[in-house]
Amino acid sequence: MAAARAGLGRILPESSILFLCDMQEKLRDRILYFPQIVSMAARMLKVAQLLDVPVLLTEQYPQGLGPTVPELGAQGIQAVSKTCFSMVPPLQQELDRRPHLQSVLLCGIETQVCILNTALDLLDQGLQVHVAVDACSSQSEINRLVSLDRMRQSGVFLSTSEALILQLVKDSTHPRFKEIQKIVKEPVPDSGLLSVFQGKNNPLLLNSRP
Image (cartoon, rainbow, N blue to C red; front, side, top):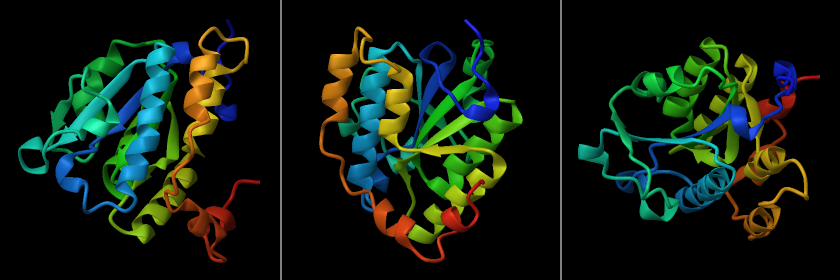
């Protein structure tokens, strides 16, 4: 099979991995739209498991911020503890074990800290990064918005969870499509993005790629 062209941002299950970043108990009441963000990340996780896409999970200083929230549905995944503001250093060995890897799908919090720094570290290693914008958030909307724009400027692909899911499944004849269709058909929660993208001075629109 021919490799996907990097500039198009195509994703294939066999050359992708899902990163789930720091969705922890003590952040539940601090992060905007936390339940909605976790809900969309949980969808990404379900589909990744159905399509045999590897999943890596981190927790930022769990002694202080607590464990991963149960509603993510990641109980069967061993969380990697970290103190740095990027998922890459503690997961580098896992990345090194996958020389075929081309694309990283990224969900979690916070957008302006661990999501941004993880994305930049991955880009620095020549990997495509796809951020699910409806599965990422921050404590403030300005940090969320500006950081998404910052990542776009650096070459990150911004997408929705549903768009990424359907890119992965690719065809309605896929043997797992019916299961995935049920996930996609679930009502999409309001994660605050509609008001963000409607803003007149939204940098995501002003600085869009041609």
